[in-house]
Amino acid sequence: MQTAPRLGMVAGEASGDLLAGLLLQGLRARWPGLTSQGIGGPKMSAQGFETWWPHSKLSIFGYVDALLNIRELLSIRKQLGTRLISNRPDVFIGVDAPDFNFGLETRLREAGIKTVHFVCPSIWAWRPERVQTIKRAADHVLCLFPFEPEILHKAGIGATYVGHPLADAIPMEPPRASAREALKLPEGDTVIALLPGSRKSEINYIAPALIGAAKLLARPGRRFVMPVVPGLRGLIEPMLDGVDIQLVDGQSHAALAACDLTLVASGTATLEAALFKRPMVIAYRMNRLNWWRMKDKGLLPWVGLPNILAREFLVPELIQHACTPENLAREAEGLLADTPRRAALHQRFVQLHELLRQDTAKQAADAIATLIQA
Image 1 (tube, rainbow, N blue to C red):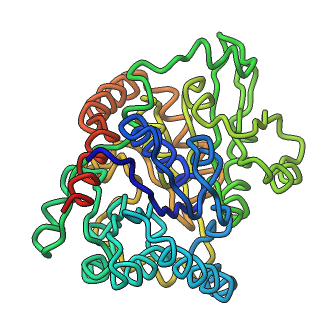
Image 2: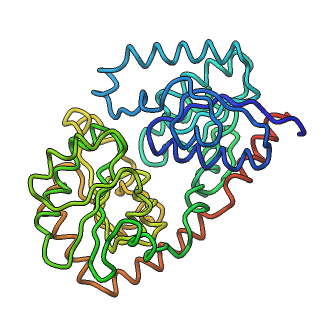
Image 3: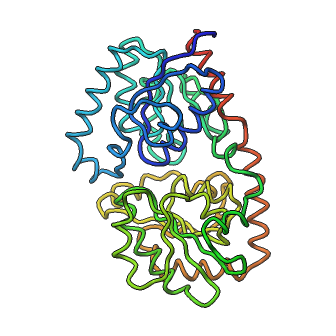
């Protein structure tokens, strides 16, 4: 294909913006004249994306948050669909945000616009009935994990394993020394990174437990660093209550490269921590109603991505009622004290990195080009 395509795209929240930004970077290397519009964030804007609505509009989690924002979300989706149908991109790419994107993709597909969904929903972990929703919505699914295409093919859905763009972007050997220098962290100290998540609801529910754990773990020679999504520092600062934690705007990758261990909210950040080869304790809390609705729907015993991919509890998971400062601190101390266990984790994470490093942008561009030409 010679002509650079026009893309419609939607990415929700910081993790989707990160994935979409890396994808756009690779697509623009193939098609320098590529144009893209829709809903996105700063990583996408840096690749020439035209933002019609900011990705923060979709940064919600769970049934309660969705119900509180449903009117605005439906209005945005309707306006966006009408605008895309009028502009008719060569292909629409929905990046994650399945509850928003699947309805939009279904409408666009019915209007004759080809649709790609980037990131297969975790139908292998919970809500397997969504495979029929995917079948209606997407002409093709770009899968991050190697076992996903077979599941989709069995349902008659086109799918390609493209690897994970983070595995291409994160170096196999993390730049620990330069990251510590950039964050002004002493070389000889033990550094613990606290990653409470990127949504306001995650910060409200998870950050207090992480900060409480830091208070229990604090002692001479230990430093704590917490990356904060730009604009949300005001939520964190009142929670610190005298605990010496260095807040940094963004820079989660620098914090992971610099740290010796991380306490991290379940989600994409756990995979990032694994790609940085850092031992971790996975944490998660949510609204009680959301937890009640979700707790019995899981198909797997694991929640964190490193554990799901390894199909074993490589690292501890402390979810909902177990997510307390005392439990987090105890698991962290156990990892810090166990050098052989940390070395074994490092080797497993190297293997995971090699599995996921597939030159995602090229694989995705090839799949998208084939779909457009078809």
